[in-house]
Amino acid sequence: MLINLEELKQLFKQAGIKYWRDNAPSNQDYPYLIYEYVGDVQKLAGNYVVREFQEYQLAYITRGIESELDVLKKALQENGVLYSNFKGGSYDENDETITQFVTYVRCRKHG
Image (cartoon, rainbow, N blue to C red; front, side, top):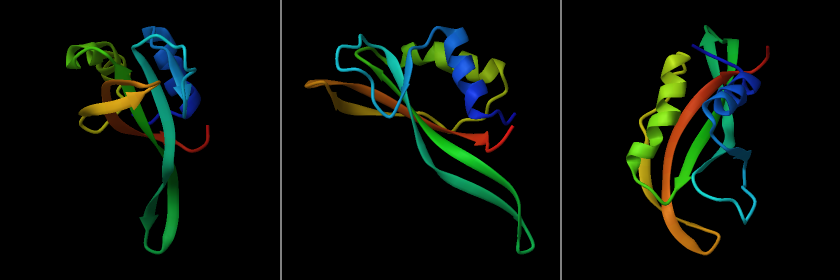
């Protein structure tokens, strides 16, 4: 299901996930989510754009392990939001090395 950005943020809120756009405050406790605009994606029919989507990167920042993703995955799945496979890796945040799990979602551009 395609949702818009406001609906996606409401989904985070309902799941109890702390989130920010682009950067979190430096004193923020883990875990939290950062969402960032990646770009527009166009669906074409012939040479015409019939629909535009906005793609966002979701980065779940934690000191923990992959099981902490369960709350985010559950929220996305229960609301029918399609997301790419999560990728994990070390990340430097506020002078600490922690883990960042990244996925991508597409949202309706308007409405």
